[in-house]
Length: 419
Image (tube, rainbow, N blue to C red; front, side, top):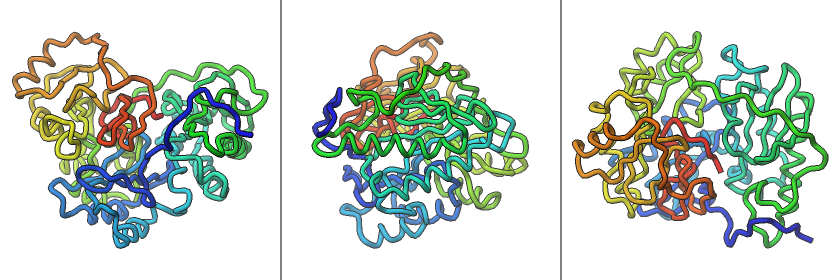
């Protein structure tokens, strides 16, 4: 008998992968999930080779720390699938949609957090891929692994782990404050056990995507847990010997990857359209010269945009081109600035922001930015805290259409919702 859910889905999620790309107006969309693991710079270079013939070849960094390609052949050819798989970014094709893991990207590299969760992340990825029954979790089920600093546990997730000491932590299920205190060594087994329970309970005709959609709580027992620590400021630039660099509009391009290839073999993708480069601090001038943002004063630290034309047929403007033209003139400020191509406002930040809705000119945009109070909280968003049924979310604005860039495309540094 299938357990009832509090929210019935009419369709399965449409999150794209290599095995099931999504068809958009500009071709196939494919999303690759590193599962919190290091990504080879050589693999990034090979991905860019696949889109080299496009007008603006790039890899999109999503707010789940994933990599997205669009404009691929539709239908996706066997040659394109083989080339993507050859990068090593799809280690278990049957489980590619399940490897949705966000983790504290600086864990083990600085003095933040209670412990180094990199071994936990690696063990979780291995355990998820080893369980045949977990291949049906779906593309929106999200794991969050936080080393105790509060950087990734602040968003919404399905199952999470928050370190509370050097060898202990709390396993969390959904948005509930109920959790289970466990030794560090038991974190992965319990996460997998709860994930398996979710998969079993949603087997059959149900289409629940998230733990919070279940009518009855997941797991047994558990206790009220303390509120997670407030999220720390997100560093940009040098972090000791290491570096964090932001990717303008989340679009990783050939000059960026070529510069990275000269300084590192691997990078870690963050949920905030940035990359962690180990031993990269001394190379920051090279990375900045390639177009990556290396300091908080960069306009790309607060300038966002939805997909826009030509990728989204609903958009009235090429939002990314407009944002690129606006960047050099962006006034100093604190609020994120988001360029939307239509009233859906896909990908808007979860915080207050400056709302540029299909601006007619740079002068119009600058006037709006200067006139927006610093404390303004937007009242019109693409649907707030809901769950998207389209494959292209971007930030925390949620969309129901296939051309949206709602929850999953990271277009800015302040998105908090990953559902």
